[in-house]
Length: 125
Image 1 (cartoon, rainbow, N blue to C red):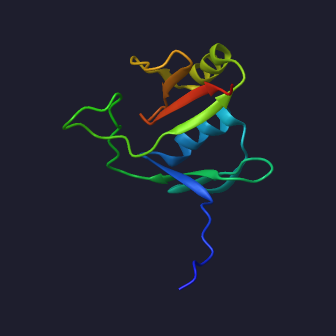
Image 2 (cartoon, rainbow, N blue to C red):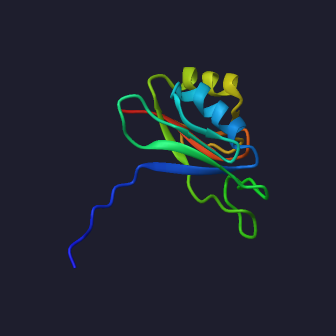
């Protein structure tokens, strides 16, 4: 069998309130909304590419960072390129993110979104 057409077109984050989490990422990234339903919201990057979606998870349990045995594990995290790390951190905090207590690298900052998903800010070399 020949490989059929397959192309990822988005990443989905679960949240107890998808619109609230989409609000955060909309402010953080400046991406416009596509779908906007109580249980499903999408953000699309200008110029195309992989977007972000948010779906309702009424029993959402935030992952633990750093991961620990027996605790809710991280399933995925976002890497977000910034031009200046300090400015990126300040902007993310202003939008509602928190700086994670544990920072494993000097040139990356792990941030926590409003429902507990970690994401990393980094500067391309």
